[in-house]
Amino acid sequence: MRHGVMFDMTPTIHHGRGVMDVDNQELPFHYDGEKLCYSISKPTQEDLDACDCYELMSALETDFINHIKPKQGKKATMHEGIPMEEWRRRLTLAPEDAIQKTLENTTQCYMTVNCENCTNMKKHYKSRFRGLKLPWLNEGVATDKFFPSVCTARGHKCSQMFTGMFSNRWHVYPMKKESHTGIALQDFSRNEGLPLFIKSDNAQSQIGDMWTTHCREHCIQTKTTEPGHPWQNPC
Image (cartoon, rainbow, N blue to C red):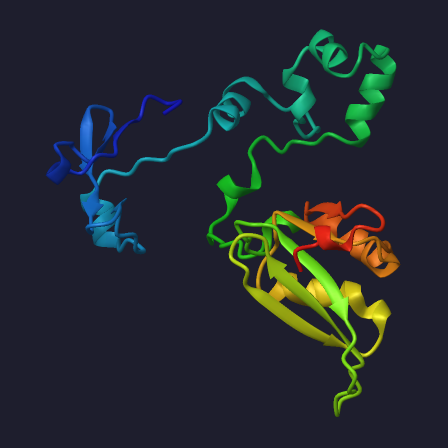
């Protein structure tokens, strides 16, 4: 669009044109019932001889090619096309010699972002943010531990219980030690999802380092009952 290429992304069956307009020439998209797309394949020599070829470049790269000329025996760098006054404004009005040394040792000629230069497109399956990696529950949960009178065959002496505040759906995770409460919370988040908030009593294991670190990394709000008021915990 920066180079005057116009798009109409509405399919023809929905009263649109569904085309890309390049130099007043309409290149129609293919509509498969869900999306507008092009069927991309490696062109043959016959295709190259018979079809018009268009090379789309970013405005920054075009400006770099047209206006920045490398000096004799020196590679062109990004800062050569920007006045020193502009660099001083961007870099907190530092002295010119400090800015020049900074540009010589750091900034190089990456005029386009990496995604524009990729020949093989990549899909990112993992989010860079911890709070977006796991699915979220549309409710908060209450939690508490209980100690059965019988030990299991695997040595579990207690369990951590999680109960939905609105759905009343509950999940139990057996534990061998009371200090494994943070691991139970991690298993609940991995198997069921991240709650909007989690409410517990003032037990040390439920406000400890592992518990608090997990809630902070995944943006889970924590709530506690008042001291001496265990009935405030729905679980």
